[in-house]
Length: 222
Image (cartoon, rainbow, N blue to C red; front, top):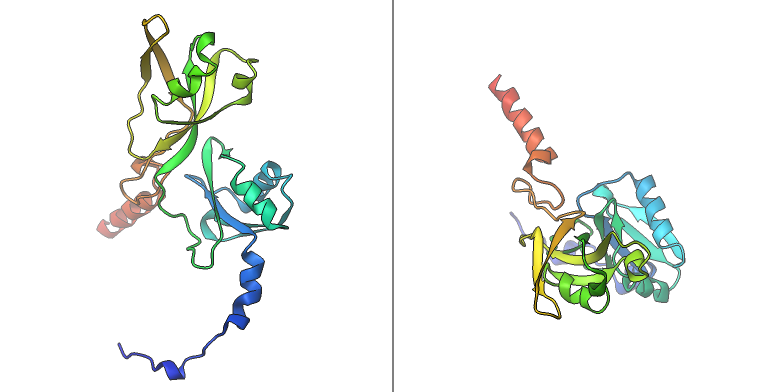
């Protein structure tokens, strides 16, 4: 390969790019882990969950990656601090836009997901709840119905699940009387990594790339 002579190349200046950099500075980018919903559905979802944050524009890239620009920097920061959101129990990942960021579904290690602690005694649903939930992994928050004590069939909490972690079906701890308490754990969604394409959100049996490659391989044999 012959190296280009830099003196022959077009040289852009800060002035050439400053307007676009300034425009997108108030944007976040993101995607749904393990899902590629149509852009109309994704747009409606974002407008609903961020209805109070003064969205200026939502733009889309391939693979359902989006850019959401807000009318003020304060609104952008408020969205970044607003917590975790789920789309059909699959986590929404959002990050602040930067000029050097790669706008694609990048590798991530921790993902939010809801779990249910079935049959958890009422006395453990106050200050004890985060401690108990941390026996699974990192506690984030409780659902409103759990916090307000309106639905008592189970305790529903959001957790930061880690890729590759073990998912216990039951946890145990000692109560205030030093009795062993067992609590079943139900996961509304588990982060899985495909061994074929290394993407998050599906296993090999549901991998489209794996299926396409298998079909192509069989067609070559015929």
